[in-house]
Structures are given as structure tokens and as C-alpha cells.
Image (cartoon, rainbow, N blue to C red; front, side, top):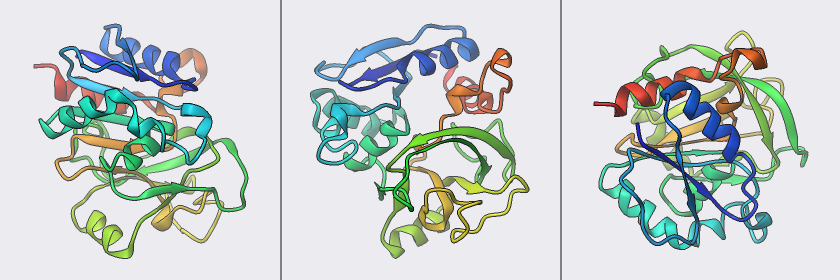
Length: 233
């Protein structure tokens, strides 16, 4: 699997993402600068976490207009696979590659903690190594992770099986009004979504930080093993 990781000024999770991809796929990803005007031959483009352009204006808003994003949009339109994590998810929504927006967390607090997610669909290149209903842990590190969209958009995401992950309790229960289940106030407890063709995925938590047994857990491995199985001929 040939993967590329996009760097913006303020990106700070590229090494974590590169290590996760390397551990699971056995290949080093290439680093891509946001001002590049072309993409090499790739199977997957990853937008990692951080604070692109210092999160000035809005989180991800400036990054969405970087030159390389034009090529990533074309790549996605041709059926390429794109993963956005945390700030990468924010950029994908600002670029309108995914629906909705990420607003300030409920309670106006930055969240730096582990939390539980439930897999809402196994029918995607990002989730095929899970089963629907599986619950796993992933670290949170965001101040603007409150997912919101118009009611008709939320209904369409649900109807089309495009909610990838949902915030839940350790027992797998979701309650959008309960901060113990839904720590940032996201509508319908949504933590990650898929594009219409299911080849673009964005999520706020960081599965890449739980892929190494030396770090105490491998809950995030299925995300990357799913991609390897989907994209390696």
C-alpha cells in the first residue's frame, strides 16, 4: 500500500501516523508538503492531526485552501482513498470532501484523554477488519471536535450507513446528552463519517496512537489493517 501523509504548517501528528502505517503495512509512507501541486502515485492520502496554520480563522479552514488540496480533491473524485484524523477531519469538512463541520467542544474544554468508540459499519475500506458493534479505545486530543450537520444531512448519513464511528461508554452505550458517553457534544455522538463512495473517512480520535503493544494497546490496528487488505492487490 502506497500512502502519503500531508504536512501543513502546524501539523504535529505525522510521525505517529507514519509509524502506524509502517507497523501495519510494512512500508514507509511518503511525506507531502501542502504547497505541492501534484501527487505521486498513491493508494491512500492521509491528513493527520495537529493545528494547521495555528487553527486561525477556523480549525482546518486555511488548510482546506492549500494548493495540494486541489489535487487531493481530484484524487478523491477519481476514487482515491483519503483518511483524515482530528485536524485532518476538520480540513476534509472545510474542503467539503465530507459533510458537516467540527465546532468547539461542549463545555469549551480541550480534551486530552482516552475514550471508547463503537464501530457503526464494517462496510468500508477503513472498517472491514472490525465487526459492526465492536467497541475500542482511542485517544482524544482536540478542542474543536463537536461534530454538527443539518438534520437532513444527519438523517442521510444514518440512512446510507455512513456513520463510521460513534462515541460510547465502555459498555458500548451511546447517549448524545451524556458527556460520559459523548465527551465533546457531537450530534448523535458521531465520531467519524464516510463519503458517499465510502472512500473518504474522517474521524476525530487518534487510532494511530494505539497500534503498538509497547504502548500498551493495539485497539487502532484494525483501521490500518483494513486499509492494507482493501488497497493491496
